Structure formats: structure tokens, C-alpha cells
Image (cartoon, helix red, strand yellow):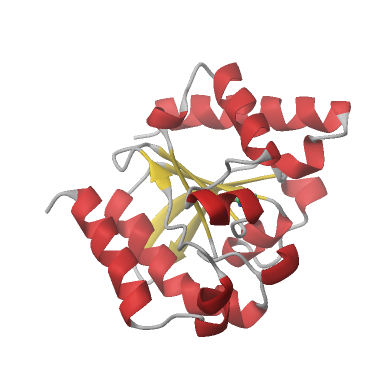
Amino acid sequence: MDKKVLVDQLQREIVDKNVCPELASQAHNLVIGAGNVDADIVFIGEAPGKAEDEQGLPFVGASGRFLDEMLGAAELSRSDVYITNIVKYRPPSNRDPTLEEKAEFWPYLMRQLEIIAPKVVITLGRHSGMCFIPELRISRDHGMARRVTYHGSNFLVIPLYHPAAALYNGSMRQVLVDDFVAAARLARTTR
Ligand code: URA
């Protein structure tokens, strides 16, 4: 079946099964993800912020503008990649999502990745990265690819810093851009 149809079904299932009802009751939108469902690269952030909740789309605020710059540095655009989050509703007052909230959404994220079947999964930020690599130390491990297996599904995961970390830090911007350009190159050469 068409991948977009399957992702739409997954979105309806999250609503029908009443996943994280407290978050759902305070959110304007469920932010399932956006971009190309046939992409080789999937970005995974942590959870929608205010702008994302209002528009129903991931990474459309300040962090998203920097994500666009990173894509541009690798001569890619949003239509070449797919972007989503671990948690699909905005946590109130932009608090961090809880372990329970991440665990509730985890099986849906796994199914989303199985549908899209990217070559490379890029986690954005420590929290997203640690969902895939529990022993992650982002300052040591950023930009380093590793194979991660879940219930028979196999992903090449590359943990990156969160774009928000680079907004006011010039040297961090360059680290993120360099890591992403290398990750995009790896996606091109990975089968
Ligand atoms: N930060 C995230 O982790 N995800 C978004 O969608 C926006 C900001």
C-alpha cells in the first residue's frame, strides 16, 4: 500500500487509541511528521514546540530554520527528507516529554520507520538520541553512525546535536552542519 496512506492510518490510530490523552487534550494538533515518505533520511526530534503545535508540522520555528540551513549545506531540501518527532503532541509550556510519554509513542515511531524504511535515521538532540542509543554521550558520539536493531528492524542511526543548541553558538552551528553533510554523504553511499 502507498506509504502516505499507511502513515495517515497510523495518525488516525494514535487518535483512536487515545495515546497520551493529557497531552492530546492540551494540543492544537497531532504532529505526525512531514516530508517525503520515500526519503533515505528521516530526522527525529523530541516533541513539537509552540509553532509546530499551531501549524501541525514539525520543525517550523527557529530550530526548523536552522534545519533548513543544514539541509541546504548538503544540497537537500525538505522534500528530500522526512521529519518527525518521538512524541507527536506538544508538551505543555515546552517542558521535556516524560519517559512514559516517549514510551507510549515509541511503538508508533517504530511502525512509522518501518513504513518509510529510510537508509539513515538522524536523531536531533540528546533526548531523541538516547531513545535509540541509551548509553549515548552526545559530546562524544555526535555524527557517528551505528546499527541499531529493534524487533527485527535494523536502522543506521546517526545522533546529532539538536538544532536549538546551535541557534546562539557559532561553533556548534559548524559542528552540526559538518555532521549533517557527512551523514547525507553516508546516506547517498549506503545501500
Ligand atoms: N524541536 C523538536 O525537537 N521538534 C520540533 O518539531 C520542533 C522543535
